[in-house]
Image (cartoon, rainbow, N blue to C red):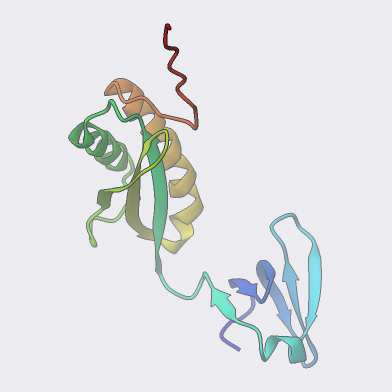
Length: 153
């Protein structure tokens, strides 16, 4: 198996921290503190994702902005938010690009690298920092909406 005790893994459709690898079963503790015992026979054919194995992980986030916000202003605001967090590694360099033109907003993809232990803190903090830097730079965070145009006849 590609994991050891204390690794945070996804085994098939189960996600949690490995507590014990026994002869017949592997025990995980889920994020909501539920203990799951999985027969090792079931794991031999299951996909194993080990989130603890590598020392660094990439945080991938997508942000939506109004069509009224210039692309460079949005990217500058996101990069400003990235610069607020010293846990974000400089190499590979942070990546911020326009991802797609959606019905009510433009989406921007953001990718940064962090030490594995910092993943979730950076994930949540970066979301909060982007909200603040969007506000400071006059970038409207858009949401799904419909524009209705009334015509006089």
